[in-house]
Image (cartoon, rainbow, N blue to C red):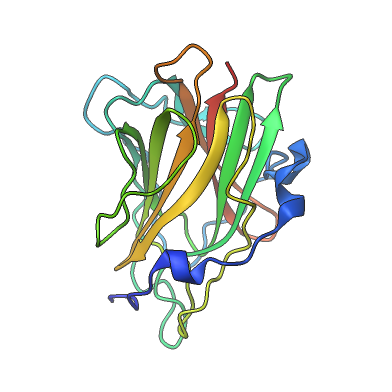
Length: 230
């Protein structure tokens, strides 16, 4: 089922300033994983082709499951989940729905984090460095702070409801952590949900990243992107 075509930049407008400053506001205190949500089959984490390979189901940070360990994703790293569409029968939601983005800094552990929380099953996702983050559909450049850029894409997923209104609570676009400087929406188009991260590596070049997943007590599925602070 093809979702409504609604630009994410128009739909995602709710800003939660309080969600971006404290280290316990990024979903970093996971709970025991719940049973799989309806509409999804067993998840399979598989790497994209290339030298940057995920570590699979290595436990990390309690209930977090690392799906890609600290590596520079010069070739985009992809984690695949088999999602049956529609997730719920009409008039329910056809795809996993983004409900929240959080950010948090973890200086003691040496990383900063951005998390994406979904209602419904965990979508597949892909993360990699790009010269320029572009919007879905139009291919327009996305303005981001920093000198290195990560593309974060989810599919199938959406961030709007049946009326086209945004479904997610969001932090401000300017993050201002040592290396994770900002984020931006890059599209919500035909089941593809995209974001860009702006990084400023202290020594230039690129930074290692880590990907992980968890399920909260309320059944929300969370995907985390961790970036080294230095």
